[in-house]
Image (cartoon, rainbow, N blue to C red; front, side):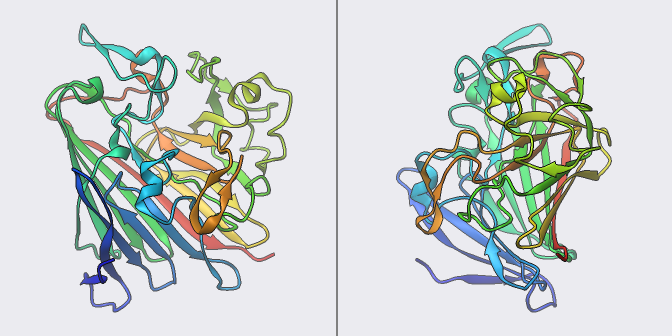
Length: 368
């Protein structure tokens, strides 16, 4: 492996970006890894394949630093059986029913890679391409910008879409993710980050003991293929109420509720009370044993809670094996299947417009 090369971005000695070669893909080229370090002891590593977070090291209440995202030690792991670990997913995160939608009188047929449905951008979505990347100056902390141009017709989508995703490690152990995109033709866009978190440290067991609150009074129930049925349902009185009844993730996950049976646990979009565009608190997770906390802020109108229901004896980092519920995702997003759901917030981007979205993952600790 090549030696690390540091790029100084600020006068602060510890606020820097380092890069190395994480591996290579035959016929596609090298995959680089960029590592951002904060003065508070947090470190995040992101590779150009899928613009994916491959490591996120955070101190606990005693100062011990552990990697809190699931993944693999080598690039080869990400090229194999990879459930979107740490990736940026797009052009459309989540599902589109039947892999089709109508827009401006035209019917578009997308790749179907989740039964009859389209999931996370298709067979070769943004998680399976090599992005361009370079450090950028940002007075908030070390920052790297990733860029990719999705060609007209890629996976069935109309328009050439130019995308940038910028990761910034700000003071206070905040990982800021800024998304931007422009298009040459009207097209759906719904980008998100698909990190699997375990605040006890990846490979430390399941996440059912994590305490969770969500700023959501409603969610979007799904059919048997995990496509929203069009309803926006209240969470009160259901296992989906993490607003008035914050609870351990595992406290109600096995309740006899038809939506939990369909998803094999939580795999649902929650409608955030903060609405769209303003940066607001969406979720808070707490791991009592380590004291680590995670607060998620977003400008998106929804967040998908996924509790790793389909993980099954998957070999991960450090010889760890990831079983069911080994990690949880909080995918900030517009709602699933919005191109086919006229009552959902629109995901259509048109020429001359700019898609902009921000999510902040803020880590901290709490006393026992």
